[in-house]
Image (cartoon, rainbow, N blue to C red):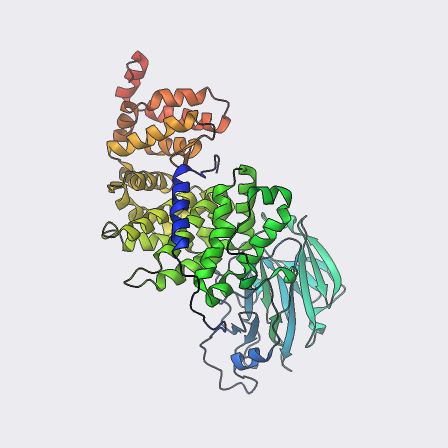
Amino acid sequence: MGNSRSRDRRKESFVFAATAVSEIPEHGTEHSDSDEYDSESDKSDSSNYDIDDYSDQLQLGPASYSFYPRCGDNVMVSGNRRFAKRRRPLSSFNDGVVMTEQHLLANESFKVQIKSMVDKWWGSIEVGVTCLSPVSLDFPFTMTESTFGSTVMWSGDSLLCNGEMIMTLAEDLENCTVGDTISMTLSEEGSLHFGLNGEEVTALNLHLYFRDVNLLHCVVDLYGRTDSAVICESGYVEERSEITSFDVKTSPTEEDYEADPDSVIKQMRMLVLGLKHFAELDMDLTIKLVYLYILKPTTLFENVEFKQKFGDHLANLGVADELKFLLDKLISEVDPMNTKWDSIEVVLVTLINCTDVSLKLCRLCGQCGLVNDLLNNIHKHRNNYDDDEKLHSFVARSIDVLHNCSIAADNRQIYRECGAIDKIAPYVRSDDTDMAATALLTLSHIMENSKKHLLEAEDNIIEFIVRTLDVAVDDESLRCEGFGVLELVVGIGNISVYDKNKISLVNNGIVPLLLKLMHKDLPVEQECAINAFCNLCKLESLRKKLQSRQMP
């Protein structure tokens, strides 16, 4: 995101979050870790049985992956979302597509085992990977029919990409029977290794078919004779830990990372992969772990390169979905005594810091629906956010996350489809100058030409933005008040399309700052400063002032 915004204001938020953590009780309420699934059984299928009863009989050890609950029309998931079964195996042979909630990680295996089959139909289980998200996918009858995006599937004795032949294999999945296990292992170089019963079958260079091989979901198609399947223990299983194995008194330091980076990353992986499970056991302790192992390192570590790697790795682990789950759960449990606001604060500040350093995570926050949730939340409280200090903070932190995520160009269509402009615009008029400036800069990234009048800002907001840039330009970190030089100058260029803002920007001294930036050895910032300067020159009265050098 150009200049990372691990800013002063963010550190103030971190201190607030640290205080919030200290106020969370030592022990939360214990909950059952069993998943419930409400479904109607197909009375016409004699092979049907209660899926929860059956999955409870399975010996499900720890695993890094689970199926996303949203799936094909003829399939259901249970058993901690690791067991999938067709609803009507004797009435229909397709509509049985399930996908993992997590992305397939490098140096990790995804393994699925056939648990039951029917003596009807042709065809059998199919497995593969896709760039599509289970959150929004319109599930096809069978995944080999998918033509949107990119999907690679092992079907029968063939590897297919969007239904088109890639290669013929020596092993045929149609010969599989109950107990057979199919695996996929992603290498660091981006090769996907397919295996059957522990023996490698082939490897495929995924870079030929996908733009980002670290953002792929695993796909299992319970097709034809295959009735049910279960996710087996995966790679890195030994790292999947119980909640009690974490140290809740200390967290990794920058010295720890420099001495043993793999250990710090391993702890982070353990926590993210277990977040949902941990939250069901003890939400209060889970929030403390998020603070110690995710929020604190992203705030206090000074190594910018590490923070960016840290953020991208969190994105690859699926932290956007996990934090969305925590936030949804906490918001649903808020009571009149406001006992959950401190925990909500920790999750939001964690999102702020992580999206601050990782564009990849910003994109995933848009794809998983988190952006839409935050927009709906701030819209809901647009008329009462000033009534309560906690609620005001909730809205302010939400807008901070929305601002970070709006910088990712891939998200802008998502913002528009969610009605973001009308939901954020009221906050440009907020008495909280910081909130108003953040809302304005967010709008500047997503604004449509037909609504550019909404970018009109009060003079005090323009003054705040110019003053912040003035300090940031001369700061060694190129940051001030939580904003980086690049994002400020991009925002100034965007809001200067409105004539009233042009006048206010010039009157508040923006021109000398833009000229100063043009002489710095910062190519991207230089280009953005020139663009902003050119926008200012489009107003004739200002152009005359510039020509006569009658500038403040």
